[in-house]
Length: 202
Length: 103
Image: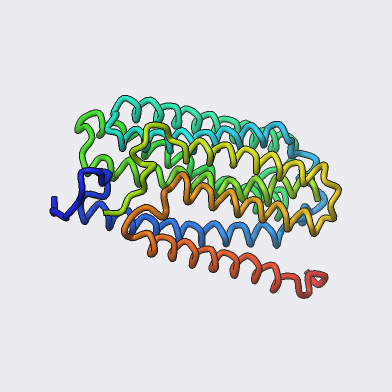
């Protein structure tokens, strides 16, 4: 590990030059992710209302289901933040506990989302039904795929954490995966607002 | 060395406050959408504004965007990405609004 000057209070993940650069690099990646999702949102807005005589979103969206998904993901973002808080106090137990809760909430979110998609398909709104539903499923599906990816990634990091304990390397990995997880909630805020809320209100 | 003081305090105040604010903003957006009686244009403006505030809370209070020595690059990257996102979304809607009746 390359040595840099640091005080004992510096979080482990920032203690090496590599760690700092990896974290900065991940922020740049998140910038690219914002650009990716913006194209999907742009497509969604353009195709909004083009339901080709099929089901319209206001008929199928339900406040209750959307709120459950929203609060599951929001709470998981919060518990993920707590996990980092405990990591910085060198509590491996606290870290495992809160990351475990985060993954459980993430899995529940995915479960509800899959249930929602299956419900829509039963009601006759599938990927191929109309331009609107194509845009809807691609946007929300891309987000859902990111969540699935995040769960698998964080689970693998937990295995490494179990084997190696808290080191500048493992804490950097945990911290970067936490950035990813929070970012997924940031994207969901806009899906909740632009797709579901405005879809039900307009 | 850069890091914020709440990192080492005993109770994760910034997370709890961020979480509470996020819940309040979500429920407020819901109220604006269904109960406020504002015009459709105003509803869009207000709920998108609330979403941007909530996203900022996540970035700053949960993701510690501003904590490291590289914070100005991190913040700059995200602001630039936000500019790209707005240009893509608004630009696409604007361009595609011409001649929709011919499609």
